Image (cartoon, rainbow over all chains, first blue to last red; front, top):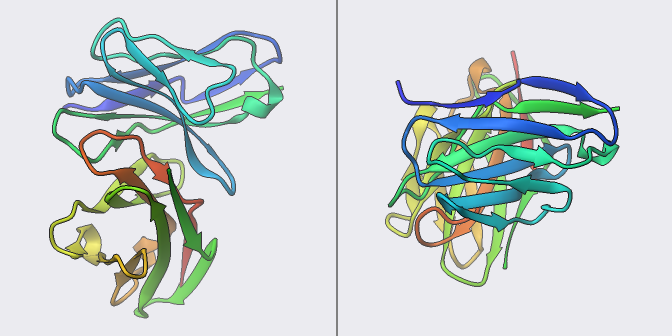
Length: 112
Length: 114
C-alpha cells in the first residue's frame, strides 16, 4: 500500500548539532508539507513544496531548511538545533486536485 | 489571512452522550474547512472536509459538521460518544483550491467517560 513514512520516530540531540528528519511518500504526490506540533499551538507550518526543486517558507521557518530533489522525499534540516525546536514534527502530502493532506506518524525531537 | 479558534481545550462527555466540539474560523477568502483526529502517538487522520458543496458534511466514525457562514463556524458533532472516540481533534482552514496550506486550531482533547 502507498504510504507516508517518517524517520527517525524519536531523536534526542544536543544544542548546536545539525539534525535531518526524513519524510518519504509513495503516493507520487506533488505537494509536501512540514509542520511542528506544540502544546497549545496545534500544528504550525514550517516549510512546503509544490514539486521538485520548489520550496517555500511557512509560518515558523526560522532555523529550518528543506530541499526537494525528487517527488518522494522532503527532508527537514535543523541547521543548529535549539531547545526551542523540541517538538513533534509531522510531514504531510497531497496530490494534484486534492484538497486534504495525508499525514505521517510524526517524529518526536528532543534538543538538550 | 486565516485563523481558527477551537473553544475548549478539553471536553469530557459520558459514553452515549452527544459530542459537540466547537470551531470558529476567520478567512479573507472562501474557505475550505477540515476536521482531523489524532490518536495517541499517531499522525492526523482526516475525519471530514467542507469544500463549498453541501453545508452539512458527514465523515467517518459517525461524525458530522455543519458549515455556517453567518456564524463563521464549523462545529463537529456525533450523536452518541463511544470510548474509542477519545482523542485530540483539530479544526483546520485553508483557502479554497487544492493543496493550500492548512492553518490549524490549537486542538480539543476529548475524554469519554464510562
